Length: 143
Image (cartoon, rainbow, N blue to C red):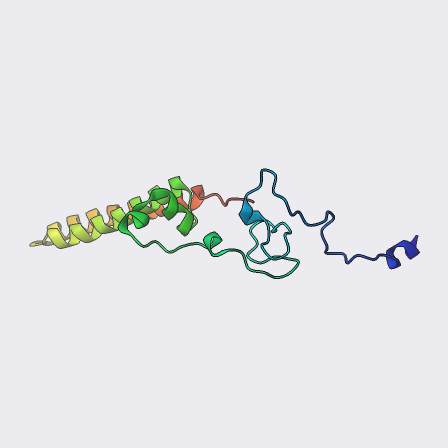
């Protein structure tokens, strides 16, 4: 039984099937252009020859304003789900609301100052709750 493992002619990391040279229903970017083997899922380099994937597989930086505003790409770049991204924006809006209340309203008396501080506290509590909900609703994507 132990002799069978010693008489192996192939290395342990080699693919079970020979490299595919023809593509039947497969995209060209899933095969290595150098040796023809399948890339591992999410791999940047070929596990057989070490060849790098084609440049079109790399993530591109957003170049236009419309690329920065695109909701799906923004979710992907930040690693957030759509709901978590909405609550994150809501949290930042609440922080801006707290700053805006502090800038707009001036306090002439102690009572006015206390009222402005209560409003700012309410805005900051809203931001805190919004960020907490965003963290709790952000489910990690499993491959």
